[in-house]
Amino acid sequence: MQVKILIVEDDPDMAEMLFDLVEAEGWTPFVAGSAEEATAFLSHDFVHLVLLDHNLPGASGRTFAQRIRGKMDVGIIMVTAAGSSAERVLGLETAADDYIVKPFEPIELAARMKAVLRRSIVMPKPERATDLAPAASALQLGGWMIDLKRRLAICEGHPGRTLTGAEFALLELLAETPNLPVTRSQILERLGSGTERYVDRNVDVLVLRLRRKIEQNPELPRYIKTRRGRGYVLEAPGRETER
Image (tube, rainbow, N blue to C red; front, side, top):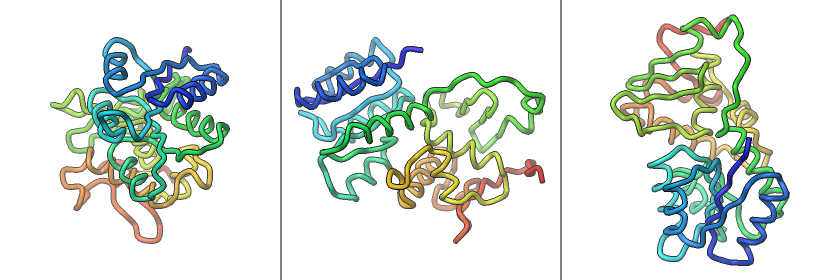
């Protein structure tokens, strides 16, 4: 499969470096120098991942990431010079799947891109007998129908509302052991992240993003609940964990 990656970067030298990095990994790179160019490209072509500069001419990368996320489900990595942890967390909370701070090692960015692509590119899985049981493959959470077998999340009445790859991976992990807590370490392992890529705070941000989409009231969640000192649990009526 041809993996397409859009680089949104107005610095020609940085754009060239990112282009070479993407190409070296065997993926197909495309470059846009502004949000307007990126919008025009995405209007007629599909990509699997967007490398997005935080400081774009005429628009902030965070704002543009929100625009992208509102229209399509695509992996987004924010490339930022901002060293503030608050800025990075805000970027994750609003739209991005990950971030990396300039200057960075190319090998680190490549690893992060692979992790996001693993979550956002769904590969067919061989069918097993257990896949045929509806109770084990489908969840109804409020207005959402979650098909774990086909890896689909459909929001009734809102066909354009989707889950990101990271959000779906988190929900899938919680659904594997309904009504039992999942630790932050288990979540980090599922996300395919190294010890320094995602920290506890970023896991909490991802949970918050998922609650905002799934829960009617994210402040008083009905499905995705916190178990202090133990992690998070999916309380799914009618589903029990195999023991």
